Length: 63
Image 1 (cartoon, rainbow, N blue to C red):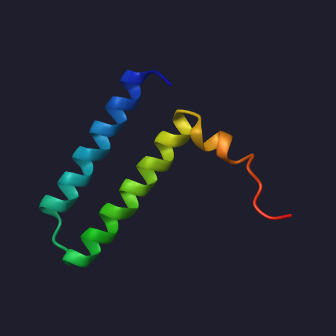
Image 2 (spheres, rainbow, N blue to C red; image 1 turned 120 degrees about the horizontal axis):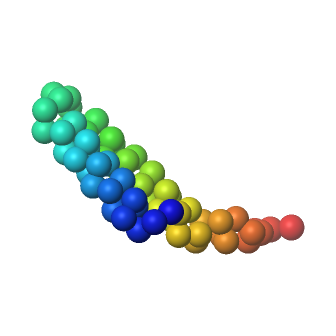
C-alpha cells in the first residue's frame, strides 16, 4: 500500500472521528470508548499494513 494512501486513510478517519465527536450528541464516556476503539483499530491496521502484525503471528506462547 503506498504511503500516500495510508496518510489519506488516516486523515479521513481522523476527520470522521472529529465530526462524530463534535456534532453527534452522546455521553462523554461513550465518546471516550469510541475514541479508544478507533485508535486501537487504526494502530492494528497500521501494524498490519507495515507488516509488523504479520510477523508477530508466528510467535508461539506456551506449548
